Amino acid sequence: SQEERELCVNQLENGVLDYILTVDIFNEGIDIPSVNQVVMLRQTQSSIIFIQQLGRGLRKHESKDYVTIIDFIGNYKNNYLIPIALSGDKSQNKDNIRRQIKDTSYIKGVSTVNFEEVAKKQIFNAINNSNLTALKVLKEAFFDLKNRIGRVPYLYDFVTNHSIDPVIILSKYPNYYQFLLKMREEVPSLTLYENQVLTMLSLEVLEGKRKQEIILLDSLLDNEEVKYDDFINQLNISKCRTDEATLSSVLRIFELEFFTQSNKEKYGNKPIILLEDNSSFKFNESVQDSLRTNEYFKYLVVDIISCAKEKAKKYQCEQPLSLYEKYSRKEACKFLNWN
Image (tube, rainbow, N blue to C red; front, side, top):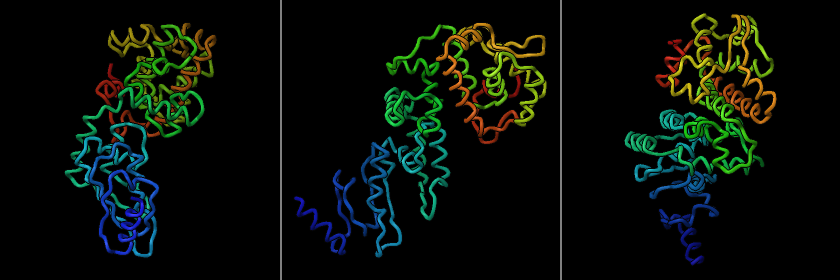
């Protein structure tokens, strides 16, 4: 009964009881400032509920200098929710979660977090075995952000609102337009080729790992053609490599010469950007026409480039590869300027 609960809480506060054991009763709405230890024995399915449970011990009181939280996280398969809860990172990016276990500097002030070795192994295994790209996860992130900003979110909205990493969505869908159709959003129609161009930019440029491609795309959105020398000047301003091998590699990407035949077909089977007379870059006629006549297509291209610019901030432009970052074999070949 409520009376018995109040009696037990009173006994805890006065030292008659050392512990109270509860199941789903004290998650929220209970205030016992003198609580100096919280022990979690059961699995937590939600990072939000985890923070609420932890919060039961966060009230200040003259009888305590700190609160100790002990969580038996090895007991459940969703234990990777703990680093997500503590860091507030909603990206669903497995590499980010792994980093948050090894480096807990995101906890500020006098608080410390210690994952025991056995717990670390359990969490790493849980991350490896979890499906963070499941449609249910993507759908929840999409509608959560849609409700928060009051409109259909686009890729850059996920970045600026610290939501799911757009790369996670695009690991499951060829481009964001296809994802919006899956979410049953009413969006203007695109041609097959516009879809293919979006797929190429989404899968090859959006991660921002080489800034040269982003700078060229950005320039061509503002100008029908970009002089070769002007492009070099822009790269110099951004302190990017301008050696012949790198520039040739960038062009091979947009001409689709770098890719396997199956990828070429997926990306539209014709060069997206051309270098005319070795003097100026241009989009091919189909892309130019789409950018002129289809505002929605242009909006989606700009969205990809905005996202790529933001992601590029953590990568070096002076070197082909950046320290401590992760590359696929294909990306390594690309950025080392291999044919």
